Image (cartoon, rainbow, N blue to C red; front, side):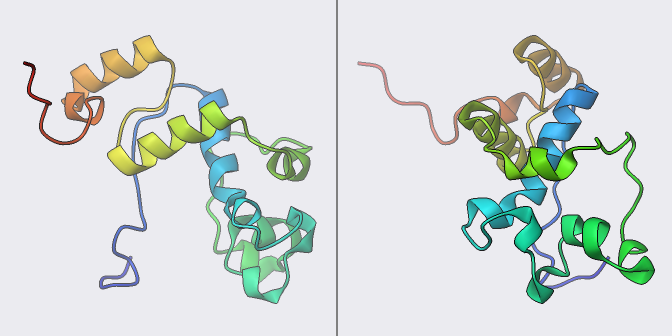
Length: 134
């Protein structure tokens, strides 16, 4: 891994509860160009997107795919379709919260228990100073 402004804030890490939640996170990452309206569908990736994992896996040659690590789970057969479909708003918000805050990602009970076990309780609280109660 490198250092400097190119890498600052790029890499995130947080606990994920189950396989299903893992797929939510990967879908979130690979659908970024779609949500940003940079492409109409995952199949529309052009040369500029050769840095994306989805393009590398779907259209890249052996060398391009060599940059990718194996997933800990099998890639679903219809993955391109899954990425192309709209991700539920609540799911997007929960993944974003985990990315931004380092909050464990999963069901509420598991998230709270895991945050407590790993000393991540602050990731569950609202940011900033608590409002003064009058």
